[in-house]
Length: 317
Ligand code: NAP
Image 1: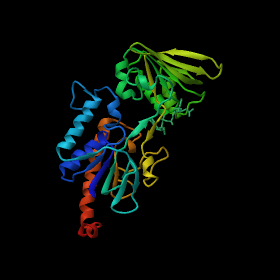
Image 2: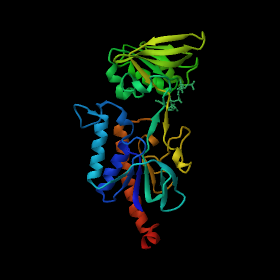
Image 3: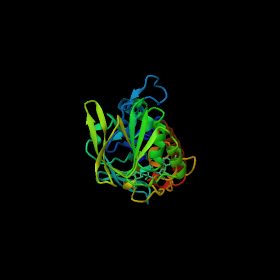
């Protein structure tokens, strides 16, 4: 049985691991399908404090992993397929294999950006296609950019990208935007943003070093059109990675874990959540790392208390 098991290895999970390992709690970290998380698919990170020249995403995550390892964190590759938080110690199944038991659990499984699923999209991620304006907008200074989506994220990304882009075309599959009125108004009043509504993305058009634009279907005319651009930002929402929880942890209407304000506590004492899986607003590496630190400190406090109270029977056995 482990005192603390951390599920997920983005900046939140690694930071929690560093803190718990330094507190001699020997955490077990279950690495998941994409060890290192979303940052392993980005290129250069220029806004993580402490790296004045920037650092590559995979290198930053590798450094965090080594730092956790140095203090005694244990790593296990695999995917948590099932949890049982109805009894203590908690039980976790990895890839359907025999259970691991844990006194406390930190969920840091992140959120996955949704993609369009059209040809050439995945092949050109990091080479013209992105799902993060804050991360990659800077690389498109003076360029033309397409943003796909009709929700608040798309409006926000489009507005943000006008800081760098010469022009932003917002492509949405319907006539009506889903975004709140205030966000729509902001985008509509931005002189750099034009709207291509009623257009369904069909295919990313590549060129030798990047992308040439996006092929769309004009739903009014039934004709295909090409919108030329140097960058394509897909902003059609994120999916927090919570399906393995089987509904045992409270989530909001969009599936994000609900934590008690100002803490990382979930509805189950001893289960904590940090990083993007509980944050639909900031979604930054540095905010994820910060909440990972909070989760470690919250679980350390929980373990101190539970060793004296709830766990006395079990620890005596
Ligand atoms: P969202 O509201 O679910 O909007 C997703 C958009 O992407 C929709 O317009 C949808 O089109 C479109 N879409 C989905 N799948 C598509 C596909 N396969 N092809 C083309 N288009 C597709 O997601 P979101 O904008 O990320 O917002 C999520 C939540 O976060 C919302 O509650 C939002 O208010 C909130 N948020 C708030 C702020 C803020 O207040 N600053 C900023 C960002 C997000 P349809 O409309 O046709 O379904």
